[in-house]
Image (cartoon, rainbow, N blue to C red; front, top):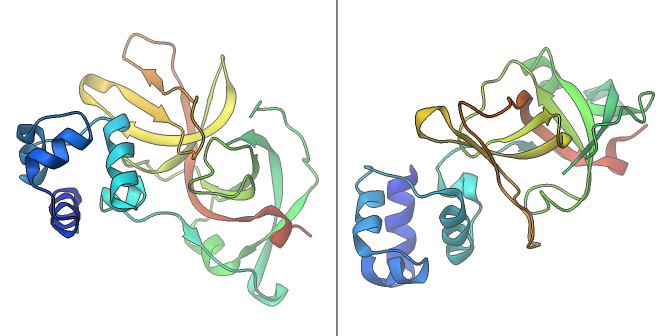
Length: 210
């Protein structure tokens, strides 16, 4: 289902009217009506509130596929890839450059340019473990709701949720159970943020490290 159908289905599952749902997230029933008709989508903060209320993730609420979570298998079905650095989910420092992790062969074949980073921290702990191997496809264009690896001068490299806005604005948001993480909003006149790729696979780091 898409976003509009997901909102309606979850609202009805909880037995809420459009007005009641709007009040729970600090908006009007008119906003909810626009979501359910497909004419609009809420901003990131409201999406987070909706996903928590409905007991789902932002990507699931948006009706988009999340990154693959593949269990570790025997080494015959795995492909060794070097970890190119450490990032936050980061300081962008190229650490652990010699570490090798095992990536499922099917994932590597579907994403020929795949590279792996070691993600640490709590800012994406709703999606990934606090210590995770993240497979990044540099050729995949991110969609709203995707987790992406980005880099800028102020923060170095980090993993956040990509949200495309109007007028060329992009919002990068943490997806954490913890409070206090601020959204990064990049407008057409702001210093650019380099999108290094989209997260297409993840695994707990110790499960796949050689």
